[in-house]
Length: 366
Image (cartoon, rainbow, N blue to C red; front, side, top):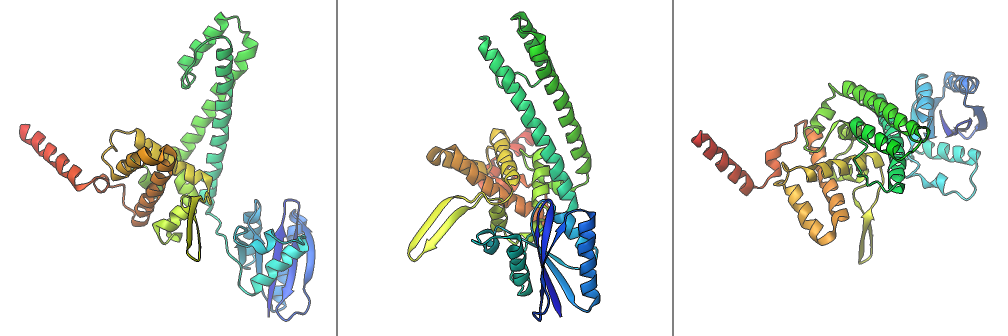
């Protein structure tokens, strides 16, 4: 006999619905999300299994799902993490209670009809946390710098966007503010915040550099012109395992870079990109593309030629997104084949021929 357990998991408590395959027994029970509650739930799981039942558990993906999943799987009981984006039976229910949600999960688990979500590896989650902390620190630094730019503007002092990047420039601006009789108590905390948080950002970047020094995926991505430590680490952390994407198109779709498609009868409609999937991954790919745009080295690449041609007709926004999608396909091939970025494959035959002739001429002259 099989026992299917649906779990509606929250921060402070969770509700489990026990559904027996033979229809006997079952019912719902609430547990606290503390050691006492988890132990009671685990004790009941073990008791059901010892009684001869095969136990399986389903839970929706949320903040503490990994902890819950690890505890239950340590008992040797399989846990299905449900993709709530694809399981609308719960999210769009008009009679939504914890008990009903848990019962629905148990019912669909019994029939093996739940769309499963995949949790990333522990290594990827650690990288995501570090990247998140760095992002928050950088946002705070930018906010403080904007306050200083606003102060300079109010005093009639012209300032540039990158003026506060270096410590030397910050000292000069500080002296200029003092010359305008701006009290040190007003600006000193702002400058100290920038210095302190900038040091913390550098520490996190050093940790990321150390953690990814032998990471093959990060090193492969960094062979792409325009990809640095942060963008490469972000792509690695939010891709996790490239093998779960069978085609480049599925990887682009996961990144949210593919358009909406609505086909009905003879009507075919394509909309904006879906923006499904990790926004961090999508942003990192856009940043890599913009790095390629700024580089002189990449001007002969076909992807850059298509970007420039599209920019003239569609504008920079559409061309950047189209370029990011093409870049996602390049990244898929690089990671799937385990081969570094091949610059020769990015240029047309004509450009390669001219480059070869120039190299031959230079060698002959030498």
